[in-house]
Image (cartoon, rainbow, N blue to C red; front, side, top):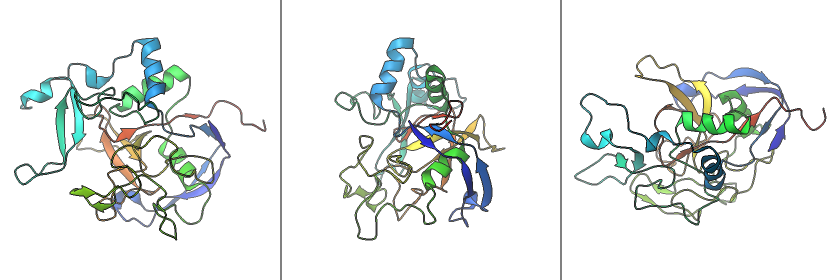
Length: 269
């Protein structure tokens, strides 16, 4: 965990996307935050000690008119669209945190990858087990900005890649110039000024903020940070101010989380 001194900052931007603005001033107390996203190894320990079963492993609730596969345990996975199927996302039976891309996939040898295929409730259960919590959107964005006047970019001024994101023309081909075409082990890239890794790119991260969408059938939470699927030609949400809305009961192969602890005293207290 890394201690983040409290302070005041301007949250949001003159919006690249409507949901990002208008900017507003926010003041926060100090808090501890996970240096990296929670990993497969950390989540595996939680499951081993508690017997927790993630939502993707349970029988899904019946949805009127849903295709047969969505009545079986599974989750959402990204797919490259084809001429006969232009969908980017598919319900994959058997996709869950141990097999994030479907039953043929595995996390063996990938202990340091961020855990994915966890819903908001799965992440909150892990947080409760640790005695900590998921970050608010305000805490998350403050930590991602790291006190900088200029926002972090996926490449520096010399063109060096600083995050795991999508190079190429999304969704046809990720060139992998950053060394990855999927999730990267946590901490592969340099930390920000607060000592936090992967605050942009790699995987989206859950926050406690409810998006409050009137058209939603259930709870919808804000996720932050973008992922390895964010490209400059589409989405470009690998920025601290960017925000996305995600159904709380649905995991994917590009959403994870990290923790905060606002109750434990800071290092100088």
